[in-house]
Amino acid sequence: MSRDGAEGQPTDQPEWWIYRGTGHVIDEGERDRRWPTPPRWRAFDGGPEQPPAPPEDPDAGRRLGTVVLADRLDEPEVGEVEMVNAALYLRRPLLVTGRPGSGKSSLAYRIARELRLGRVLHWPITTRTTLRSGLYEYDAIGRVEAARHAGASAGAEPAEAPEIGEFVHLGPLGTALLPYRRPRVLLIDELDKSDLDLPNDLLNVFEDGEFEIRELVRVRGRSPEVTVHTADPDGRASVRGGWVRTREFPITVITSNDERDFPAPFLRRCLQLRLPDPDERKLARMVQAHFPAGAAGTEQLLQLFLQRRERLGGLAADQLLNAFQLATSGAFRADDPGGWDGLLEAIWHRLTPAGSG
Image 1 (cartoon, rainbow, N blue to C red):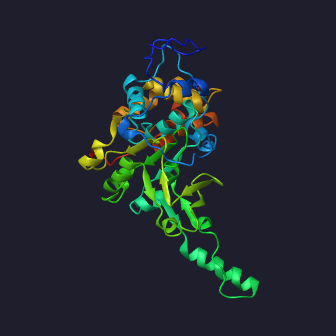
Image 2: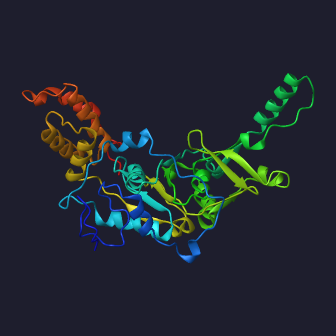
Image 3: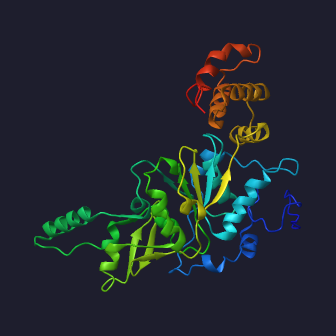
């Protein structure tokens, strides 16, 4: 059990937990002291070491609201916290499933905030997403055009091509695999929307923790180290020999709405966590995080939401937040709570067609 006894910290949680899911932001020195050594088969030695991740960006605040600390009577689900810590110790991706609005994506932001790991790298998946787009993009046409313009301005043709690194942009996955001293948090959002091949395409990257930038490999004889753009705002990184090799495997949260099955080799490389719909306690904490000053009819509105969610077979948590936003704007009147039933019917609509699972 934990014995640190820091102010406001629960003292009855397992000692091996680093991520506690309480909302308490860990001290960096304590985090680094307790950071686990990777398994031998998941140890990586990439370089050169990159500067620390940028600080948490506004997207985290938009998703999480203000920090709402859990007290000893209001601790997170043990199974959820255990799986996050197991993924961290084993350096394996965490596949998080659940219905829309159950908090799958926000889990990545909670991990990054609590462990002080900086800005989350978000990779939203569509049917057109490829592994290459997540790793890097090379703008060959842009480089040719830049050389042409440079030659025209100098009054001579042909001009020397601009530095190749200016036209290489690492994607979210590629940026996450850079050799940071502490891992980045990577959110691969809604993988079930991907092309059928993408889960299998990810296998080698997950296993090896490295990838090749072919355009830089071709020029490594004359440019052994190249500075490229990253997926962070104004981010730059050095790449040696055309290869990106990780040092600390990123904390990877992969979300799925259970809309498809994934191949067995992919599942073997992931730890799996299913999130239930948030219960009354979690919903109340979420509302408090986004409306710290309170809102009219809080308890009554929350109960109405729970009743309607059960009747319809599921509602998303952000649908509850929409109702509270309207309540704080004056749409709800305590002396006439039934006066906005029609509005609630519109914003608390069914998420799946009637009769579907």
